[in-house]
Amino acid sequence: MPLVRMTEKRLAANRANAKKSTGPRTPAGKARTCHNAAKHYLYARTHTIPPAWQDRIIPRVVEATAEFSADQRQRDLHARFLYFSLWAIELDALDEQYLQHSIDQCNGDFRRGAHNWYTQTPLARAFHQRRMHIARHCFRADRDITNYQRLAPPCAPAPGPSPPPPAPTFRQRRTNPYLT
Image (tube, rainbow, N blue to C red; front, top):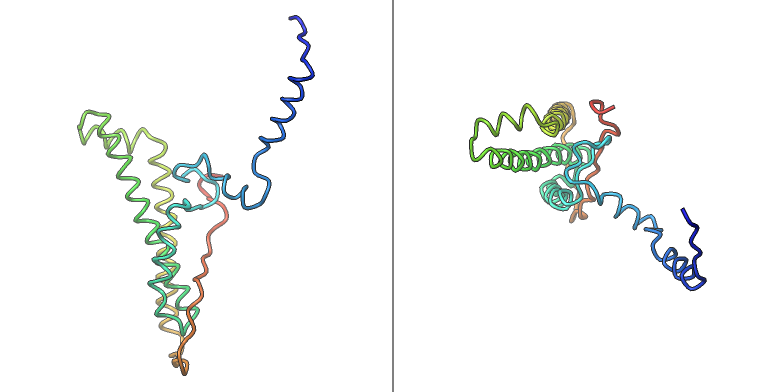
């Protein structure tokens, strides 16, 4: 293969273009672009909720738990339960969307489309595993709420106007045990 010499003008243009296309440099830019290829986050090693879902879920959780402003622990427990419940609802809606797509590929035959989706698609297994993970978290949150309400002393309301409640804290598992 013959060696082609590059002109100085072309080499300078290549170097100038290379300086422009280095990708994100700031932590905010890197955080924004790390989700570019993700569609549903079902195969993620960490339990990550898609940012679009977070934008819909978090405000609803904050609004619903605002009444628990006197008791931080109770508000966090209810927020955790609502967070995972709403995540399950979003996941079920996505599952229905994929199921409908599978049925449409089978010319509208529901039985054949559902069979194909639930038995021959690895994504359906990922849906099931993530749904079981969310169900466990909902169960634990509900159990913690029940135990806290049973064991906690009654909380007296604070005198005067109460400050606005801070955003609830969420704890998520770091790794998905089914995918390791």
